[in-house]
Length: 417
Image 1 (cartoon, rainbow, N blue to C red):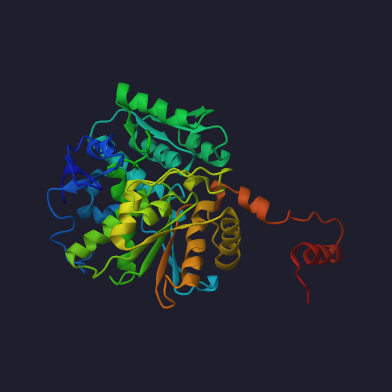
Image 2: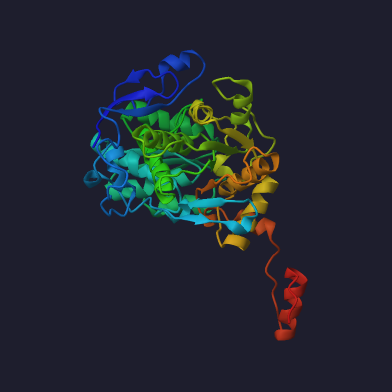
């Protein structure tokens, strides 16, 4: 198993001590391109293993511990990972597969990040876990902190999804609600700097990304996809993107497999976003994505930030990928479509990849015979408001079957017989 030897800037490659997980790269910050750090190891991750060597049957992402910063026996785990990869021929998008991360313990992909981050929190002797979150990241941090026996403080904001805040509280987190979103970062930053709280999420701006050790967990998404396709990865991998943690982590995972010779190429990555910040940086060639405020909040609260990150742009450029800006109308339509055609109810953010794929197929960017994997990051019960607004209310029927048939026809267009 490799051992972390340094934290390395995702942009310039500068090396820093392994304990610098609460900082970005000062060299890049001075150049107005604040960049996250990623884990470097004292040996090549996965080296010494053959791709056809059986992996012991651990029911979590930690069966890949030869690529990760801790041994499986030391992991804080609840069975995250090993999520299904499902063919979706009914969507009319060609050869599309869905990597369904809603099957994780807290019903989102953030469980991979939380497991990695809090496993290392215990290694570093952390006493308190802290997160700033509108939802999924906070829920995952709360659950895994509970599993590790660590207190967890979560800063959220007024207007966050009630279901997600309830989930944080159910796992025993101490939830603090602020009126101004920016206060989340200010208060968490003070706790990290003054009391040594261990951060799992972004907590200063401009945002560079999440905890580097947590992001290593996202590499396992790439391993699972490559393995599922018998080490012949798809041409494209499309993700809903806010700060690009999973985007960068998956890219890093595919790169590691390519370096080992397990795969012969890395999929081209696509960031499906709502602000247009990452797309603007890709077009301009700038290192730092610009801030692009919206007139109104997006329904995709999980990816609703107005500014992307250097790490997201780096992953796209290095993979030959692209970014697509999607609309709320597209998100609503795809939430409903996925439920009606595939029996899958995603949160609004998770519908973004399908809108992006539709556009890229139509433009010819994604060729007709290219295989595409879309990442569904979380379940629809996290935020049910889209269904409430996109579909008509369920009819209330008084009487008998005649009235039922009438209601079915009037509300749903269903013709009996």
